[in-house]
Length: 381
Image (cartoon, rainbow, N blue to C red; front, side):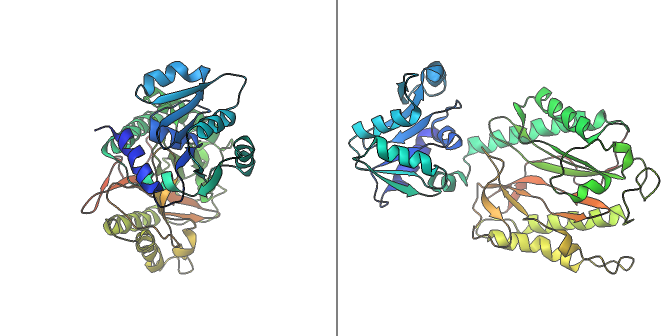
């Protein structure tokens, strides 16, 4: 099946009743989704009689390779892409043109109005993004590929860790291993947090050494055109309680007990994940595990307050896509969606634990796309 033709056909149907007879896509990731073109500085115009990729001479040969069946308007280097798009739309016979209201800038919209004064431009929000929520089989396979690459890179990464490695050095190494495993690069700058720094969900890398903490939180992904997003929290082989080496970990909670609660929260969310379920109810299933977790040894520890972000999000061409899995989400899950499920707890002075996997919503439930162990693992350094 030609999924690109199918996507453009679905978009055309979605435009009916919207009061427009053409649509201009200016967001690179949405252009890629609709055309298969992976280059830069190009727009896609769906007009009453044509579907046209607006680009420039730098990309002409690439367009022939990636989009051989798509009409292209190649602008000279003396004109901007906006100017070329305005020319295409003016000649198309369209009277009103939809634009990506949540993506196009105010300045770009004002330029279009000035360049094509006879046209009416109508901001329409989220048309392509809504379509992208449900993945076709080709997209699911590309995400599976990203997961395979990310996991190969991660296995190489953990096999080479040493006690004196700093967070910055570990980030650099992980990025390299993902590329060696077959990725274009990482899907986002990896997060590698030692010890108490794991209490920062998006901790930037520092000179803190692996041997200076009792745990290691690693969040990473691979980019193969489509992306994945994974997190593992590993026990350090060094000290497991506050000591001279990890003196910044001021609180001595039991790693194994807290890890078990985070894993139980993820399992509860996976059990709730299926078509027709509200995304916020999946989030609630995980939060209920944290709310009910009690420890006689730590009577004042409230894990519900330590889970400080949404449970997950869609993933695909971008790391963060719809649907949103969080308490205030209005999204309803459908078969074909690919989402992250990433419960976590973050305790200042001790650190954090997050377990994150990429999950396909199936017709009768869900399926993990990632294969790394979700159990508590101790680094073999």
